[in-house]
Amino acid sequence: MLEVIGLSKSFKKKGEYTQIVENASFSVGDNEAVGIVGPSGCGKSTIARIICGTIRKDSGDIIFDGEKVILDSGRYNTEMRKKIQLIGQQPFLSLDGRQKIGSAIAEPMLRHKIAPRGECYKRASELLEKVWLDKEVMNMYPHQLSGGMCQRVIIARALGLNPKLLIADESTSMLDTSSQAQVIRLLHRLKQDGVSILFISHDMELVKVFSDRVLRMENHNLINITTEKGEKQNEKKNNFATCSCDGAGTDSLGLHKAGL
Ligand SMILES: Nc1ncnc2c1ncn2[C@@H]1O[C@H](COP(=O)(O)OP(=O)(O)O)[C@@H](O)[C@H]1O
Ligand SMILES: [Mg+2]
Image (tube, rainbow, N blue to C red):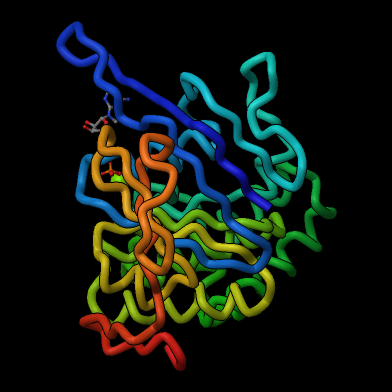
């Protein structure tokens, strides 16, 4: 479904270019949860932002369902704005404090002309239920909600566009333990419903619990890849290492992969 081929990106820092992502290649299959893990600052969000079109790549190709995500002209393929949705780290910052939750969830559906106004609001209310929030939340403002509730609102808003891929970039790292567990369970449920998930985190245990397959970004320059069996492969071709993810790991949330 998603194929990233030879993606590279450098940023100018103090007058010099620093390579942040170097020749990264990976894929996310239909109905698959793929994890990317790596220390803070290694370039994980840079990859997410390029896939979502908020920053430009230097080189490489990104293909989604057989179509180029970034067109040859350098423009972002607008079709992808519905198909690929990003769930970030700070839900409060993604919501307008003066806008009611119902309106926040309906807005992208209205913008993309998914349905007439009344229907978008009806769907917004259904989506709240889908993320395990009461319908009453429709009329509330972000400050009346906890961080975990806000994050579930962000997920509901993304779901309004029927995305095929959710990129969860550290989307539980600002939450307390129980909210974190709830968001993880919700993402797992969405995966069961057929959504693919690229799960990005600095927390190896969490990534292992959640993902079918884990890629480790060792640092933006380190080039090394291993298969699930731990064999080195394609050295100098990729800056990810694939770790086995047999689900045996448990994270601090007590979530077992089997049952979550
Ligand atoms: N727009 C930018 N301009 C310059 N440097 C950036 C920019 N965005 C990210 N960086 C740098 O790129 C590196 C990787 O950042 P990021 O992708 O956010 O890492 P991660 O998500 O793995 O923590 C960091 O050193 C960061 O400072
Ligand atoms: Mg990041």
